[in-house]
Image 1 (cartoon, rainbow, N blue to C red):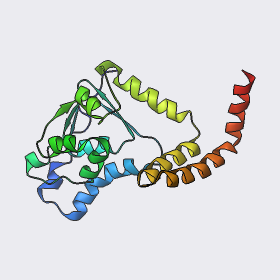
Image 2 (image 1 turned 180 degrees about the horizontal axis):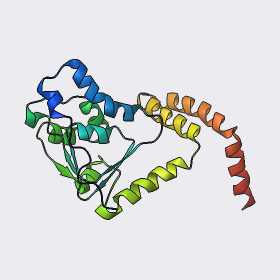
Image 3 (image 1 turned 45 degrees about the vertical axis):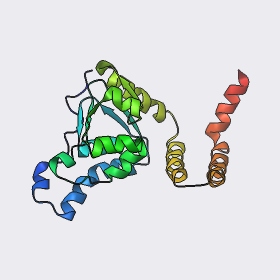
Image 4 (image 1 turned 90 degrees about the horizontal axis):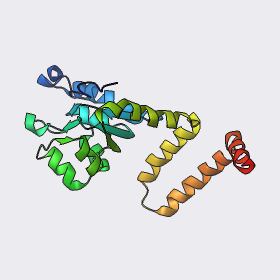
Length: 194
């Protein structure tokens, strides 16, 4: 299946023509809902991701790009300050230099470069994009939903911790919870039978 011609062309420019705080927050809400999802989210970027479209991709937990992907921040080129958490989201994904080059210099990068700088997990051939995105999503879906939710919550929570000991303390409680679930006991029995 070929990727779509664009991932996301950005925000509706009509809403930007006469912006208000409520209008801007309404635009942001679309990708912030993706960010807040307790389940794994996968972006399959097979064409241009422009402005807020970059934010939509950044809101996902895993990003896969095809060779035809283009990441075009474009805010400053339009005379517009970045919004929607763009600076925070992009800074979490790539180096300070990549943030500056993409956001302030307007450098547009393709899928290969996006993988090189860490913006995406992997760059694949155009024809393989949807298959690879589905493979990742199906792998996560094979895990119990509650375990997946708790793991994603832990990843987000430990990111804010400055001490390894605090992360270990959080993880030990959650690992004990999972170790006492029937699903884990069954998998251990299967492993011991081999």
